[in-house]
Length: 636
Image (tube, rainbow, N blue to C red; front, side, top):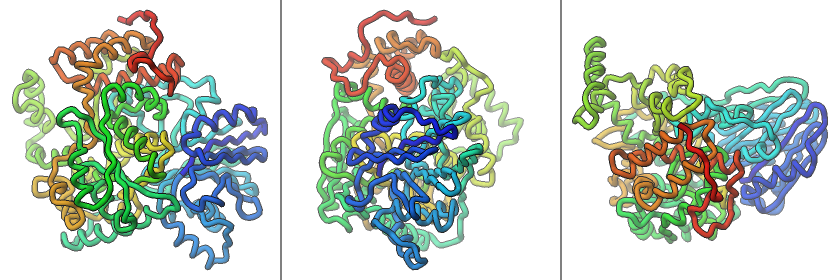
């Protein structure tokens, strides 16, 4: 688990060594144990290592086959032992016991076809000196990040955007990305907040020949192919694959712990992990506000499972004090409030372990979000003739807000592709038009998901929603914050649900077994019932609840108002409209907390990376003192 930064320059004119090292140092948190640089024109690769496996011999960049290949690799390959044994039988030799060497040896044997055999999370680049080409790849789920910037003569690759940002002065904000961000609360891949930088999409690889353009191709495509098995047979397959996945995710030469909330996903992971570590430590955070903490449930679960639980309560002051650091680590604006408790639980865990397991991905694979049940609740609308459906929709839109049944009618008469873009949708198009200076009506929030709807048109609506989330919400939000918030504390996060074999099993399960008995993840609940305490199985899903709604109305109101006034984002946002949202929220007229949080996170990001008026890890006398005192005109 590490971070990389690299460049290839066809003019053989590298950036200065000092600048390269500064850019690499931007991601020191990803690998504080050691630093390595390989340089041989036209390629320079830099690496920051967090030592997890083969602590003594795992340094990178790593050479292979008489220096023909050089690799930098961020991630973990969980089937590397099996691949290594097979490669040895095929005549390949190894100098280390690392998964890094297994990747490059497998690539030497099979070329880019090797990527399909990797079971794990990864972002890596391999330089082939003979072929004079650079190959890069990112895992199928998008667990590990991969950014790149390309000009006519130069290519930069990086685990985090901040390394590229440090080197390129001419990066400009992509107003199309900003417009999408306001709806999604993150910038959908492969775009970034900058026009000039891209993300390598999950399940893709590239080949960059020294004298040629970058070619990007997919090595993986999600497919749901249900098979006709009994409920009991599907349950047994889930049990078998989850036991195998957790066992492989526990492979490490350093202590492994686990995050533990009050939900079934993390509890399942902990229950299985304990089989491999009797002294497993678990970590939980919460807030003292009523309804915003799972600490007590997690403590009880830990007691029943026989594991240690280390927990912490977060105050609003701590939250606000760390906010600039959190957004700096995110690289781009990501406005999921759940990132903050994740940052704090990772901070606590890093005091005790180097690796943690977590339950991300179970909802997307096994149908865990409550909104997936909406397809069942609205099924009756499928039988209404189109003219009548259109008439009902028009009628519903004329009803005053708050009238019982209005939202039900609107959602039922609106096609799924027009209303669902993933698990979160913040601003609609009319709302964005009111606050964006550069609003583009052709840049609709549906544009990004249109191709996924086309690809998944044969699926039932619930499965189609899963398919959308796997391509949007999972890599753009869930896994982005999971990677950045743990790596901020040099902590490796492993997600056993997001495993090739688990995906295969989950994709075979019919919807009737996922959404059944008035609940979500029904079949998963049945499968894990012998591992997870009964008190957890039927609990209402909370996720990582964060009291920003309360704080923005009370103790944060003055801070938020000052933040909006002082932000130098007038060329992008009509700030008076955002102030109106704040005042409407503070007076209790409407809950605008999520809309405000999206705007505020962009403003803090802008202050950190564009204005440079904020500095991460700057000690503040008062947590609200983000900006120096000065007057900034509010746009109209």
